[in-house]
Image (cartoon, rainbow, N blue to C red; front, side, top):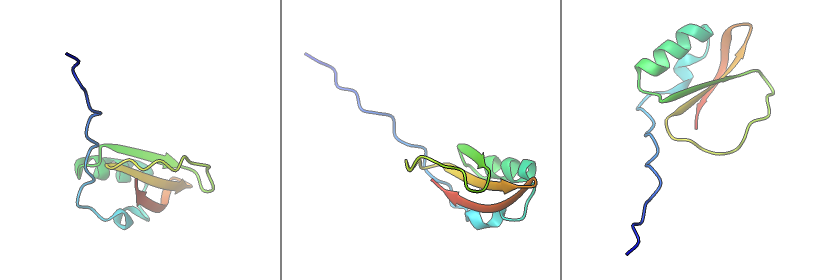
Length: 74
């Protein structure tokens, strides 16, 4: 008999609007995001090339001059 295993369930995205992070400093945005339940916070510079994989529970922050310019989930 063979045991079947399934991949772990993805972390659910919290009920939080990513737009609320725009305008915050990087450190403050990361602290708030983790407190509100995001499992991963990824900061990237403007124009960065990113993979298109969607990850529930991940918050992406586009940061320029230590300020969040854009934020989105996945």
